[in-house]
Length: 425
Image 1 (cartoon, rainbow, N blue to C red):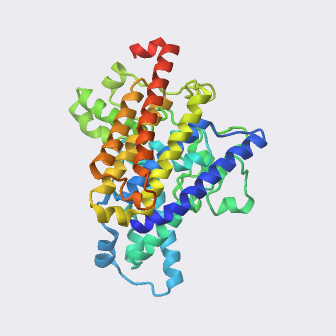
Image 2 (cartoon, rainbow, N blue to C red):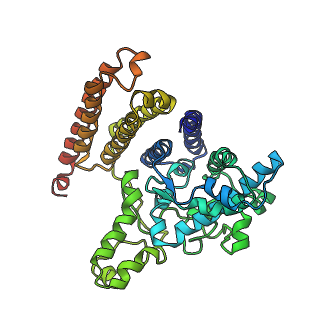
Image 3 (tube, rainbow, N blue to C red):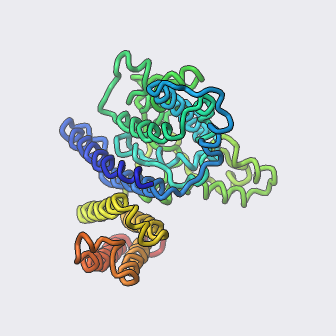
């Protein structure tokens, strides 16, 4: 937990700088692939994901340590070879987990957030799930366990394998020659993120593209078929927490509403997108028909709202940077504090992304978040030990909570004046 937090203290600023550089490069080249609100939504999703991971809010159905102890047939002695085997094993496991996420209704909910952006850029790489509480990924690491790869090696290689998947989420790198035959490139991954019928459910590989070629899921990017990005049932929200559970909520409703007992049970493991016939007829869900002609989600937002959204995400980045850098100290104060802190982060993201959506309840969520933050200050007299670094932190944060609530209420009132129909929604 603490080690991963320290790693993220370095990785987060690096990712943010690269995301912003891609934005500036696109503007300079007159091929801007990054919309501001979409980028903030993606960054916010990354915040919720890393917060969940650092807090350890998921468990493996079968632990890797148990598999090694009970199933190892040999033990690779060469240290370098052990790390190589671990990397390939993680990539093999990643392919099958990824494929499972795409092909079955229940598992798609864990992956929908990653494909929810209607753009394709470095920022969307940060859209990662918070909805997975029981991980099945470990099961696919069986080859590594059989070879006796130690748990500590997997723990070191796993973050590197994950971070290595960041760079190819871009439209600014074209074909890469002979590398196209070996590794996953931006061209391969553009196909994967596309909703064109020709590209759907292709290119699941994470580092080495040969898994797709071996298991029959490879598709080359075609010059006459430019990829169109997103999902066929668009989420139509900037709120990453809502997106994380939107498909699961649809499955729950469909399972409840269908009159067929068979469908109530089989809906979960049917192919992604399948719905009971009676429910689909009575409660249709919008699905993009013509991928080349649909309106991307983009609620009209003032310059002030764009700026305020950046202020809010910067504040949250500062909050989680303090959390990640001081996990041990916060945990020493009280074992429950890190989870209280995590809840505050989630409330913060939920509140300002609701405002980005121009939702009339954004003010309610902002007041809940700010009241929760103020309650922490009054209850503990500090912000999780931060006064040792800055004695006035309590007062600075209290002013922020008051101003944040007031400004959000002002925006909501402004939006309702501009769009009276929001009052009726």
